Image (tube, rainbow, N blue to C red; front, side, top):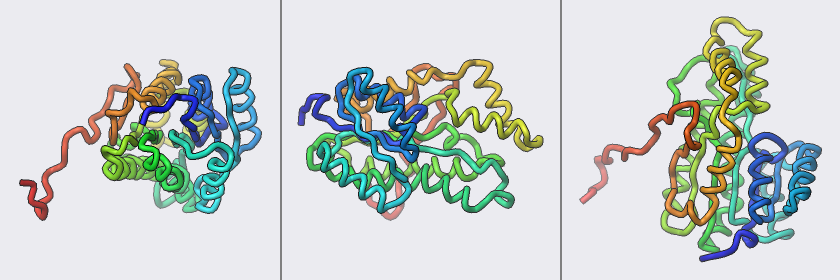
Length: 277
């Protein structure tokens, strides 16, 4: 089904700052009505002011996207105000705790899992039906190259959550294959975001076990990091008609500082209980 950009409603989580804010602004500039979602209402209002200043349309909805009831209320709000969305960008995310499994705060660990892995499931579940009914939709989940790195100390919550997000996206892609709806994950690059600054500041006060994170934070500082515009451009590509042939992929920005890491490009070995003939 062909529709114009102005008819394609976009929901962006994490829209109060960072990549989510930039994506919301870019989608609005393209002509999409945008619903910006985040916990912090003041930050969302700042994003909305930027969008409207650029001539775009944006509604805001402060929401804890890891709360099932809150996401249900969000879906009702979007439907009542604008209709069924065609684009969902899950950019909300947190990092931490930066601690060994035996030392970390369980509540912090679970919070990261809820925001980085469970929240995308909830928003996808809330909006995917309308996309399938329309025969057109785009889901973009923001993951991290950390989900492909060898496991190491201090990063169990974030790494595990992003691996879960990758697999969730692959399952969704398999379910919607051929429907006109696509689902992909992106690594936005190594960007000097608020999250980067938080990691930089926290690991600076830690012992030698945090050396790999200090080295990464320093490397991003020295190189200047990947321009956030690269991630925005990738999201715009994936959420357009040009993204129709990309489904279930781990997507990298153009010419990233960190060389792309093999993900799931090669098919898995055949399952012995299924006759593949």
